Amino acid sequence: MIEESAKRNRKTAMIVSGVVAGMVAMSFAAVPAYRAFCQVTGWGGTVQRADAGAREVLDRPITVRFDAAVNNGLSWRFKPEQVSQSLKIGETKLAFFEAENQSSRPVTGRASFNVTPAKAGIYFKKIECFCFTEQTLEPGERVSMPVTYFIDPKLADDPNLDDVQTITLAYTFFPWETSGGGGDAAAE
Image (tube, rainbow, N blue to C red; front, side, top):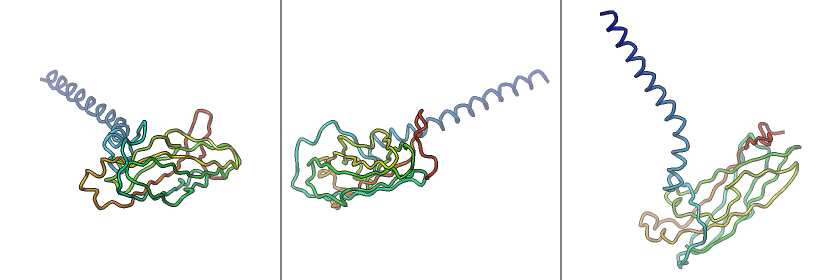
């Protein structure tokens, strides 16, 4: 009877260990899985990536506003070079953001982005963007960073977006640690 009880305890311990290991593995996979889900569906205002502009341009006008922020851990100044742009749905546009490293050493940052209203995220397409890779600025360096984008004409077919006349594209730059130590852990 003691031997049977010991077998059950070992079996229970193995099952519990397996469940715990599975939960830990799932927690590490959750962030990349959620990011991939958002990029595919446009959930939460996640912008889509495109290889080329739209094939058609509609007469429906729309305004794109631009917003920029910097995480407290990054000693940069970052702002849009234009407040907004008016365009027709399907028209390809180019906008610029200015970044300046205000520290006394090279600093690497990476921008996260989103679109509001979130329901328009799946239709906001970027062809080229500074946000696709990390950006390293030398001390005092100021750069103009482009983003080429368009609003997918399929937006006009979505009745949930009939009320959308303005879309805001927002970026936040964060420190980005590289193997060379280019991140900016604290503002100088």
